[in-house]
Image (tube, rainbow, N blue to C red; front, side):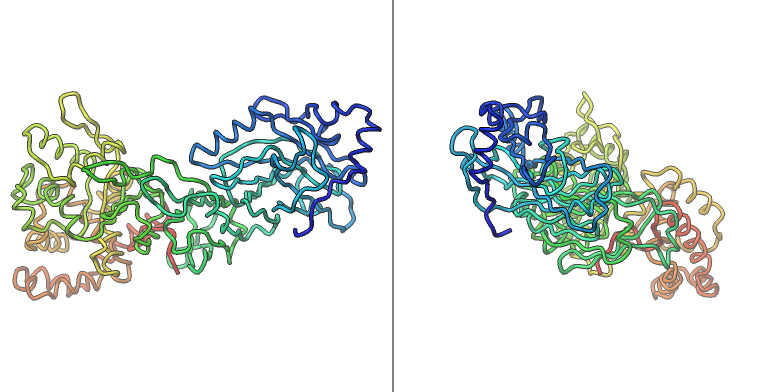
Length: 591
């Protein structure tokens, strides 16, 4: 809106003389309240918070009290930003005419007043939130104006209308951008640049986010998130043809698969190369109830640990976005830490390389799983020359046992193991005890490394994350146990002997929990269609043919069919329960 907003001297004079009470009009209370106090009415319509004669009084001007202005400043300083939000009440029956009903909402500042309460005759051009009230499908509409970070504090606001409309409520909320599709009170939230309400509900331009939120992750700032709420999906299709929503954020495409009971999706802006872009839903936008950008909690800021500032609390995300996450957006150099949105008790590490990952987990791997080393703490020289795994998974009880053993024996752990301990304690995976040991908390951890090849990262992520589900979901363990106990004996013997003979694995075959867990993960780490080929390939290895000729040939003769059948059963269960499938532990993927 390029033209100036004019407050004519004629109208001001008319109000003063006809109203007869200059103080009553310009320094009186509005019926509208904020934070327990009435707003100050700057003109007559502001007293009733209603424009009931647009031809005469198309504007209503409101001024905040000193307490209300201080409250806004307090909100701005909390780190989540602030927004002035109004809710409009529209006539129960709008004019049947197809003519537009323009409406505008803007903020007022101290320089707009020539003294404490009298507006200047002209207000300079400024951004506005525009709406056509003729298009509002409900009797109420909420509009939020998010404030510029570290910007000037508003001292009031005004509304302009060309039809009867009243301001039903005013709030100061945390800053936000986007919309909420509601059958009762739809919400549209804009930034300092203003914007136009669009009831198409298929897109939103988040470019104003960089004026409101942090644009990079540092010791002192954290980038925002976009929370997308979805309608309940009654039919999600099949694993091969899953019902989904196609979306685009900036130049990056996304596929959002629908799943039963999956009603919310958290998209971290740090996951994208263009964090403040336009998001467009190109298919099935009717399934999207809302998308709102807001600040992340300040406890996600890096904290001092092991002599450096590191990420101790996880970013909530769907894991499908992790492999392509821009490393420059990580909160610390060595790794990024995530909370799996589908299974919030599972923490997911993505490490910069194997070296750092080994420093975190190799001693732990030998303590928990390696035959001949279980329950012992190997020395630093050992772990510097031995490789644990390319990816890792651990449950709370084993993590507590490891750190308790170190505490009881006064074993000196390395810097990154102490960081791991801090992360586990911070997130309740292990619980400090009065005697210096650690009790089992809740949850599990899994990890992969950026040093792994791209295709391998997806397989390792699937393998480790199925372990994470197994650790934290009893009903899944029961399904796996039934399948394990009824599985073809010779195929099972081949798998166990394979684990036993591979030097890099050295699983403890006497650990039934471990055996069932690994049986499941080896089946589900790749798609059903690739399962037979994976087992056939390994059965044909020269080393396997040398060590297990009869068992390997048995698998080959049966075309690994027992493994494929078992994989299909587990995949069907995972799809019906979570919308996941063999080889895929995420609902969102980049396109």
